[in-house]
Image: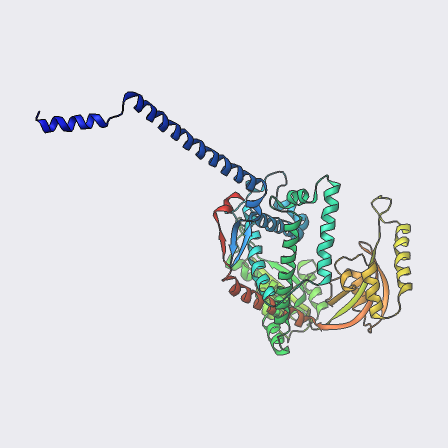
Length: 491
């Protein structure tokens, strides 16, 4: 080794630490590493603690977006509220039929929806809830833009609902927030439910105003044109019918010869008619040994006889025949209802009869109690429509109209129970009153307001409004598509 090399080696060795020094350096390094681990551990514990607090406080359920519709974000709690609202609305719409559609003993996510074979009932109500939020967001945005605010009555309705929630919560041993969470799911408290009610009411106000704007825009000519075009599905024809059957084979098929024989028999009956309803009945009875069947239906329900029945030139006693594959049906025209009459508007007060002794029937004494109550209300009336409306708001047990002073507008024939209906269409003049009784409901004190719109125009207006509102809504919803965030999976 050369001298220079040895010098370099000595210098390098001279820079090395002693064994003791190296041990000290290693201990210091290990301590630093331990401190770093400890620091990281503390940070992790703090983060977990914070997240746990966030989760336990409902932050995820109430603050973070699970769904977005347009510029509006909806939390998991709000989605659950909408889902439960859809479920409740379903029950209101289908009533007792719900028991045939949904098995109450089986979880909704284990049952196939009767409306969509690709969905469970749980998925169905979730999608319905999302549609509800989509529409609410759109209508609420427009309501805010046009300065809509809650009326005093609407605010009172919300307050009353919250009082009701408080009452039920106490009854079942909950706090109000706990009760609403049980009702609507995690993320729903008195604060959030009140907010959803406010949004829903304002959104509904805007939607109703929009519908009304369409409803008020149609001319008489437009209404008449719509009805004429759709009269087959709205008129009601009363007619007699009889079936002349052809002989069939074991498989239920009729040969051409058998059909020809049946046709000849039907033509013979038709020819024997004298152009009257009575003559048709006699001819059918003599040919078949049975009297014809009387029916009422829309013309479209009469199949190939629809145009014939709906012809304005048709008169009582006219007869036609239609082949149906195994014979011929004879139709005899009696009358047609074209809905060309005026609807009526009334105010009313309902006092229900109560089965006080719970024996399953209403006794004469129980009827008398209700009659005495409604008679006493009548005795308080000052004779004016305004006074009647006030009494209705204070006393009527019809929750669907009491807040409107008992008012029902554009009532059509057959809409109400028989006694009520009979009063409405008995050619009254404005201001006429009467007390009528219905076995199912009780006593009605009715005030006749006057005639409303032509019923065929009411039908036309409702249909056109529905078509135009739906077209407007579909266009609006293009800007309010439903977007699910990753948080939606927690639903």
